[in-house]
Structure formats: structure tokens, C-alpha cells
Image (tube, rainbow, N blue to C red; front, side):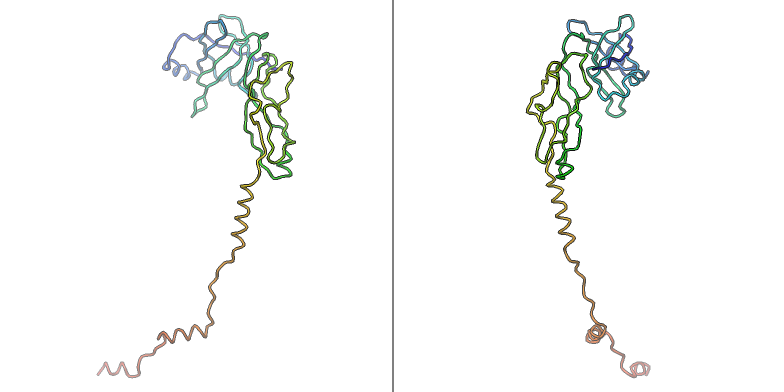
Length: 239
């Protein structure tokens, strides 16, 4: 069951990137509230209070009771949150006003549970291929994440969207059922690296053989390295 959080906002009159930059420097960020058959309303939200409210939630797609000054609180789905790529600061947010009696479509995170036997016993590698699944449900049944058990996966086996089990009375999965959510890949690359390392270690090291001292001395004499000057040579030069 989705938990509804409370957040406040103020109306925003100024438009354009220049006014938005000035607003962000004050610790607030711009947003918009929209809904079917309703006029879009520009708002501004305090970033510190916003982050505090959403602290501990793994998904940004959460239900909120949004109270804009001068209006009664309305149920909204936090549809999209944009961040500065360098600083991580929130730059904009979209709030979708909804009815608790009308179904909505939303992407829900997929959380893998368990250790596949193909990893623990087969040495395979678990690959998480699909991070979110589109689901249709009532706002009150919205989940932050879908737990998917992958413990039975063997090497080379995958798990698809069609394998995800949800209560059909509450949820309709919109994503293609053939899409792979997770799989256990064969450890081929790791085996090749291990084989290459073993081959390199098995090659003998080439060490030049040191010649015996007697043989080395003979080579030196043959090259004339031990020649002594002729006797009386220095005397002949002195005369």
C-alpha cells in the first residue's frame, strides 16, 4: 500500500530560465501541477523540506498530499524530478494531480531478491537487465519496488517480465512480457583470463648460464686482455 506524504508549495508567477535560476539560489525550485481537464499551475517548493519529506524513499514516484497556498490539499503523484548533473540540486518537479478511484500507469522499480544457484554453485554472473516495469493500478496500491526472486536461476537462464507475479486483481503489467529482467551469464570471460594467467605462469624463465671461471679466464687471454708490456720497453723510450 502506498504511503501518502504531505508537502507544501507556494504559487509561482514568474516564468523563464532567468527567474528559475534566481529562485533556486534562494533554496526553492520551480514545479508544475497538472491533471486531466485541469489548468496547469506553476508552483515553487522548498528544496530542504522536499528532501526531508522524501528521505528514506527509494523511488521518487510517490503519492503526496500537496497543499498549495490558497488551495485545499490535493492528491498528486510525483511524476518527474530533474536534477543538476553537476551538483545534484533539484531543478524542477512535475506533480500529477490524480483521483484515488482512477487507475494510473507508472514505472515501478524492480528489486532482485536472492542469490541464483547459477552464481553460488555454477560460478556465473548475475546481470540486472531491466530496472523498471510499467504497471497500471489504483494510486492506493502503488508500490515503491517489486521484489523478484532470482534464486532459482541457473547459468544461461533468464527471468522475463512474464515471470513477475503480481495480484491480477490489483495490477496489470504493461511492459512487454518477453523483456528479460535478469539473467545469469556464463563465466566465459573469467575462465579465459584464468587460463591466460596459468599459461603465462607455466612458461619457464630463461636464465643465461654462467661460464666456469677457468673457461672465462681462457676467453680473456684469447682476446689479449692479459697481455703484459714488453720488458725494457720503457727504457728504450727513455734513451
